[in-house]
Length: 118
Image (tube, rainbow, N blue to C red; front, side, top):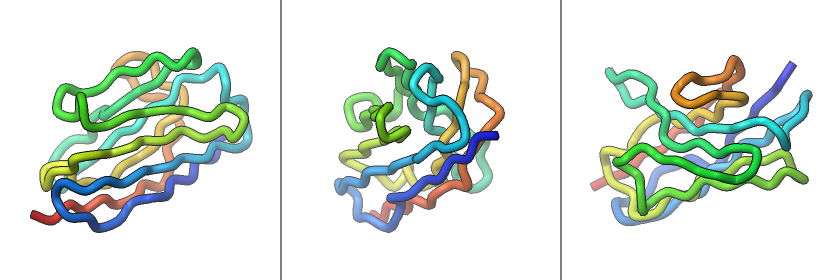
């Protein structure tokens, strides 16, 4: 069983930055792909960024150049550094374990709210 605990969300003004963290426990981590998803009110959950076990990352077009996903395997933690935040980035952000391409894995964190004011 995998447990994922996110932190780092909050309220920030447009143009500001936040760093989200997701700590995994209960299973292997270093060889598993990880991802960050988000869901805004009235919208479907979307993949924001993903990182392979080897550290290769990919991003949805809307966050390219602004967000950076990274991982620390020793700490079983994946991060999402979010810069130049925009009001349209407002959403609940979820950590996901074990996804493949556009298909998420079976395990999700509880979510952390990010609100960007204009």
